[in-house]
Length: 329
Ligand SMILES: [Zn+2]
Image (cartoon, rainbow, N blue to C red):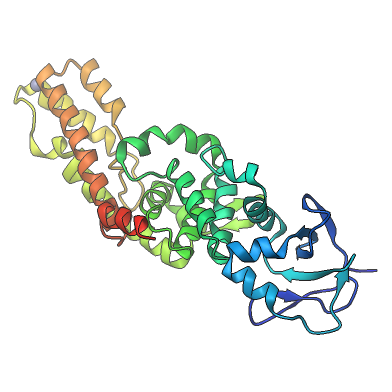
């Protein structure tokens, strides 16, 4: 007996073609007294329709529409096919039905899980879960420079790699989670150019690429970000800030030239870099203290100035507007 192929309906949800489908009861979402079985992929979730409908207008519409007879059932529960993956639906249903799991929707959940919860909570209009997912993701992709810098290690430990950044960028764009987009897109922009253009292999999805809109925004941003590096964080290279002692000028030029070596073919320079190696080289090269301080000040102030402009680089306005809009959701 082979698994029947579901038909996709115009609503995007699926219904069975034959009467007795195969599914594996979920080991995580299977309430014995549940009254409806949702089937995603090969996994069946026995749930309480009323609890889902109460939290989600989309589930309410889907589960209240009478299904055409003869209706497929299992132990008296109607079977409802949905087109999302089993993994993603498992995350959403646990979020909606298990109070212990709801408490876990914070920065301790990894990025792929939060990405799935954001995507499906938006699709099914589960407002309180969407909010929790966005708040949790803000621990990885915050709106201030110091928090973004401090979250580096958290991103590195959680991320499934660059593919997760790309998936997250696409999900946030699709889900209108705009408050997260600037810092996520910035993380995408700082990747190698061929990675941005061609995408990256992913163990679950095959290959992951940025959506057309995201790819276009990221590629266009690199020129602007390099400009911001030249006029902000690295201004000391071009403006003659620091003293005019010949030795200091020579060291500054040498360090500056090295910073610009081996750049990408599109000239990208990461303007939010702390340029620590350059500062160490200035110190090791016996650059005078006034010069070292001037460069350090320039880098610190430049990074703050650049961060303020990151949303507008991606066509998203300003941090203030994004934060205010999110607060009014
Ligand atoms: Zn000097």
